[in-house]
Length: 134
Length: 106
Image 1 (cartoon, chains in turn red, blue):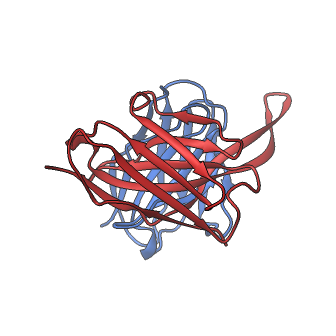
Image 2 (cartoon, chains in turn orange, red):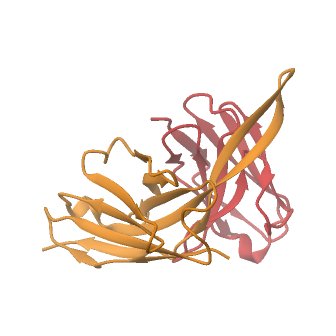
């Protein structure tokens, strides 16, 4: 059973770069069709998707963070990583890594049968709290 | 970005009650809609993917429906462990979450 574990500093100074790593155990990171994602959640608020990397290495980012975010993968270590630059107090949150699973499903839409790949975050790490403060 | 709006933001219910949470997308997302449950101090847990498909291991009292812009999550008979916060999330494009619905004990 695949498990994810976040690691990295719990305290980052303003203007510096927040760097986190997610270690995947119980399965290979480059086996299967998965997105490997980062999500954050400020205290008392809902989750915010940061971005993800596909097994091919292609990435997609939240437009509100895109200029400051980089997600990379190290298949030799079975890890993927998040770098968030120029942090401020607004970046203080619990940071989660997650696997986005893929399902091929068919359904009727009107009179037509439609088949699509659907995605959902089916495996999560426990989360790590990152505080931005001097 | 596609905005996801949940209602209500919170509700109070008793064990055994049936509850329904709604989620509305700012544009059509077909059936690219997931539901998560989150308990305090824990990561979210995927309950339903593709609007109505129950994730493996999730009790059948949870069900989802909808397509296009309007979706619902129904818990048919609340159990004590169901008191939590529920989020919808779209996977049609850049992922976005709803603001959450807190289900509290009456």
